[in-house]
Image (cartoon, helix red, strand yellow):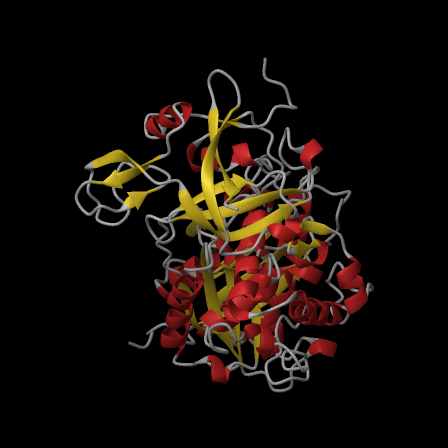
Length: 395
Length: 139
């Protein structure tokens, strides 16, 4: 059944804060910078905003939740921007990642709950090691992993990728093509943390191990900063500063996890496909209609799993599909045209959405895919949780 | 007294106590649904497969295969710093597909580990209160 909401809502503004490893400003101040920049980009004033949504999760459990310092909540933005006197609608979600907060905003606009929605994603870069385990006692499911030193999400991704390589015959040589392609794209993206830092295949293979078979450059680059978007209805969008990017469809995944170890790889197609099938059915479009694909890459193999689960290639084929320039900017399916989380910075999927908007509105400058008419932005790992959007040039 | 150098220990709860008490006796038991016979691990209050609450613990063979593995290079977990880099394996028990336990694989060279390799359980008595089931390669 096609979706009644297709093309009725839009993204009309994008704002980036500075993205850096250790900023002088607080995360709260950076987030307000991003929100103001997004409003300015749209040509709107703060007092026109009557809807707010975010997904404020810290990058890993234990990374801290102090509002304005380690996370930025709806309450924080409501109290620190001169918004509409009466905020008519807001949502602070706990699951689904930031694309799900955008989906909430879309639904609120379709329900006429509000007129202009500000969505932001603030990411803190905690000091110390990513995912370090500090407790002496491991509760819940962790009690079956922590005593063996297996607590970090990258160890689980490492095991999934090891299994993938074994099952399909992929190697690190194949993955290097994806990682270096992302860096090449980031070198054309002034917002990217690695804008001025190139990466060769030799650089990739020289990087230290994090958890074999994943090396340093298979992991996203942690940054501190924020990206904000402004959403409104298609009717209200026509008079604003830039052409709008239309929301053609959306999807959230259905992941029924049973085992201790849900990164086993066996469920990535089923869970990922549950998201993609909703993307394609709601938008009435398919993978063959996408001008580019912005696919989550918190750890590099996730993008390959999404290529398969979303139907850009068959199961077990992504590692070959990405070779020979196919996913380069001038290729048949440009992937992560802005550098992804690996090379732009860890924004947990917000960069993927922002880039999709840039591409379909011809604002991607040196990395513009000519005549990009439809781009999908998919958030999350197909083994865990995810949500996505199809964003188009025309309604 | 607990120190930062100590490895994490399980915070045993009512659901998981039978698993850890059996391990103290060097027995591997897994929670099983008495209605549909599905093994649930970690233990659950309702069966993952059929949603029955009729769940008890049953002995399993302790044999399985290496489903996947990784080598950890980061000193993320207290007490493991001296063992870096160390191996983690994901063991699929022979009783049921996707019935997984995590283990280390000590005193084994990286080159000896392969997906599909056969393993069996053994029990490491950490101290008077805790025994960890672990797995080793079957020669």
